[in-house]
Image (cartoon, rainbow, N blue to C red; front, side):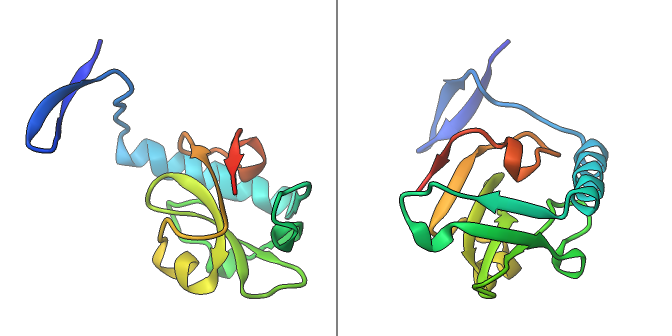
Amino acid sequence: PSWEVVVEKEWKHHEGARFFLSQSVALAWQHCTISAFQASVVSVSDATDVYIDGLYDFVPLDSIAGRGPAFQHQQRPNLWLFLATDQRWWIGNEQAKNSQDALGIAHSEVVEPGTHPTEAGIWQV
């Protein structure tokens, strides 16, 4: 099945439109946060921008309930790995993380609810 969405005031076919129940989304992110407690460090390497390479620690107090967990760079404390409102994992500054802005140095492709950043697939710098 396909859906139609409004793009520039016109209805257009959108094959990839998906809808999720908010309870299902919250539960999926809760499972992701639990997995972050179990494996609390994410390693980023071989990026074209070596500034973002390094280890990111899971920070429970900076993780928003019902959203993805947040990870802070071990050596650059203003650098965060977080889920933005566009449903992509981003590496950006603390301000972008706090407002969940789709803004930063690198981002993943759009992810399904509950997808850990290490499973996010293709990243762009």
